[in-house]
Image (cartoon, rainbow, N blue to C red; front, top):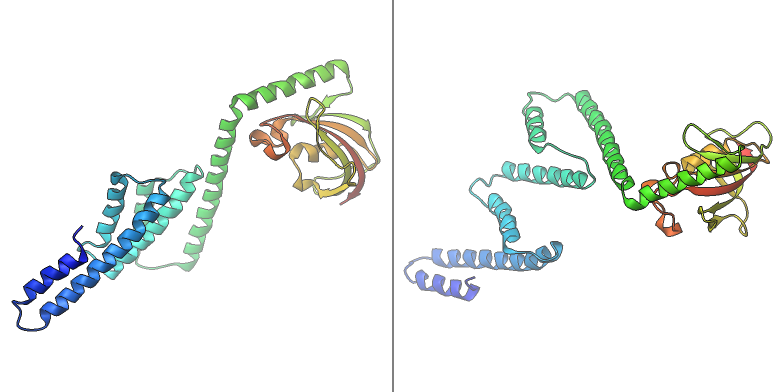
Length: 289
């Protein structure tokens, strides 16, 4: 890169041919422009390399192509505004795609163009379109999450845990006919049915419980800290369903499969593996509907 001193030297040499102050003004403009470019380029060089965990020349050339579009001949205010909006939209799309949501960028651009070039704006139509987009985005996010969960469920550890849970339940049922399984897949053994009425899915309950792995190792318990109070909407599905099977004063053992527990992600902090079956001994103390 040509240094600032060299450029100033060239400018000074050419200024000798001018009879007015135009050369001095041009030299000052060139000097300022060069200084600004060098300053920003140097600062961004380090940031760009750090952001990309190291940057090769090809990546820098991609970056420069974007710079050259903005610094090109078509440099009107409206063009720059359009570029800013497009960059913001692309950043949002990139963020959504990193979550597994798929986009057709050409379709997005065509739809934008058609809406933007419309002769008039209907406020209520705009609100309706926004609502429709939010609904579709929620669906797409849910589908992407389900796809991720399905992929995780295929992992060897998750498959092995499902198999271990099924074998455990089969053995329980062979040994004790009182062990039952609901339509959802929750297996349970009621020791004390408790009083009617039983809690509903929206009830707040007071419970003593002990959570264990299939090998009997305890990972969580109210022993030593007193009963727990929570709403049944705020716990894993198997725990909520199981507590609705007994009334006040009831006791039961719940065998919660992974899909009704912590799913394919498990709960690493509690040493709960992906799709691991959990065993809960529960006692329902109070019900508050």
